[in-house]
Amino acid sequence: MANFLDILTNSISRLTHGTKTTSEISENIIYCRFCGRKNPENQVSCKVCKNRIDIQPSEVLKVCEKCNSAINYDDVFCFSCGTAIF
Image (cartoon, rainbow, N blue to C red; front, top):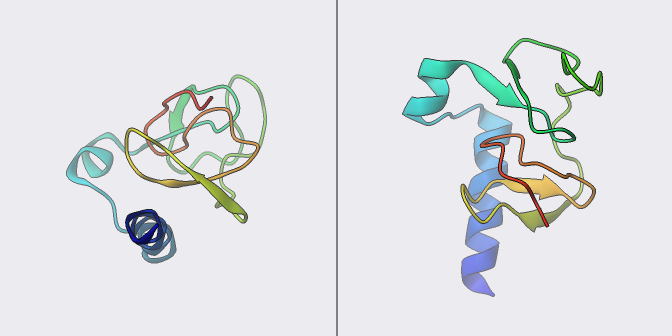
């Protein structure tokens, strides 16, 4: 349980403070939480599905298994790495 809480805390801290990994800085992209497509970081809505992608997760109930980012319970794809969430 402590490890899970550490993952959530680190993920929330990255979201709150805007800390990005080296790969995220070089690519300047964000993945749509609903369709998984790549979008420019400054995009407000997904180019493909038109859902808003500039909103940070508000209800942290899951953690992405690939990048350990905190994600909403209704996300289908991780906004940080694009991994499908099951």
